Length: 97
Image 1 (cartoon, rainbow, N blue to C red):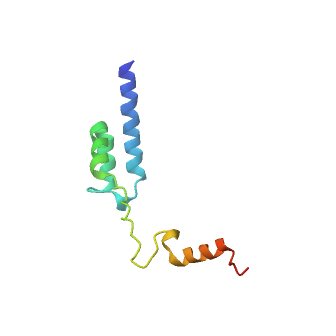
Image 2: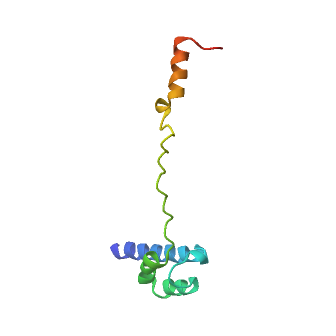
Image 3: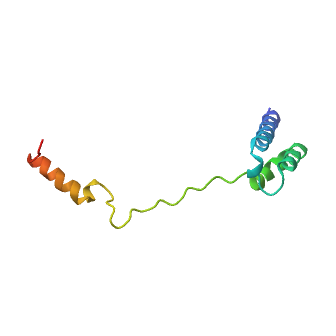
């Protein structure tokens, strides 16, 4: 029973790797041409899939560092002097409306 489960897991990994190679755009494949990656994954099922995952698959795009607000930009509503003045005026009932 364990052999069957291992065999199914290997088959699933091989199919996933093959599908991943086939559906990856040509310009995003790394190191060797896409056709060669397909051959590697088909002819060397387990090792080819592992090498594809490590060396051929496109890298995930990295998120840019968050840009901190500039020196004159308020970080939040309670850091904005105009907002606080307007809020104070509205709370006192000095609203013009």
